Image (cartoon, rainbow, N blue to C red; front, top):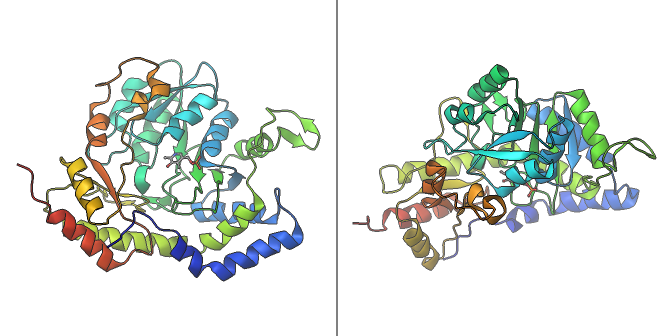
Length: 368
Ligand SMILES: *Cc1c(COP(=O)(O)O)cnc(C)c1O
């Protein structure tokens, strides 16, 4: 038996003809840099998210960093980020020149705990950077309320949550800006690195267009930092093909997650939360087990691929711990990092495969 954690080739086989055609189109036109597909993908992705503007960049990390920079965040500023996330969330803050201030996560949703955000605010705080982790939206009502009370900016990290819905609106439409990643394994994935910023603020969109392209607002006038964070037009062409399938793929992930949920309810593992009014897109289907390492080893023996996203909280990563012992600072994050396990999840996974994985888990003897 072999059930991988994720598998991309089936999707690409299915889309082979469509993808080959658009690649050929770019080759024929030769518009490799900021070509027509970048502009069209920006329009289409903005419409999909329900925002006025989208700006294509070269990665999710760049999308977040440039969003912060375009909002005027830099040295001397603090940005609040969850301790439980992928390192790139905090890295975006560091690269913008600001300081990430970590906050613990909620024990139910595993997303940033709004109750703890307020405690972390200082006179230097400029923004909150909530992460819709694993594809589950953050409680944006609470986050936006705190931001309004303390006059803070909000940049959403939507890198795992394309298409996720919170109270009727897509993520990426709540903050002053949002960053998305099209890393190949994300729910909407390119065939290489790519990313996108969404915003309703025309000035933010305009500034990011300049920042991504050597700081030029006008050709040959390098007014801002002359970065190169452009979105590759070949990737944009491929992403436009895939965007048509995103909702279908999300529906498939949700159907498979519902089967996992049903089969694992009442077992010795905890299933992911999905509060009322939230639509999880299950970029990752993550369970919690007190015996995580033993369970993972057993599933591996049975040919079932799993992973831990992420085994070490960001504040304990060497780059952020800076030689200090910061253990114990964020107890919820530190506890769940020892218990979480990502199970196989991708749109082409079959119901039978989900049933096999679930039965391997429920047949693991309960630890004594
Ligand atoms: C993938 C990811 C990023 C970074 O995206 P890249 O495209 O790899 O730079 C940032 N934040 C989160 C939560 C992610 O999952």
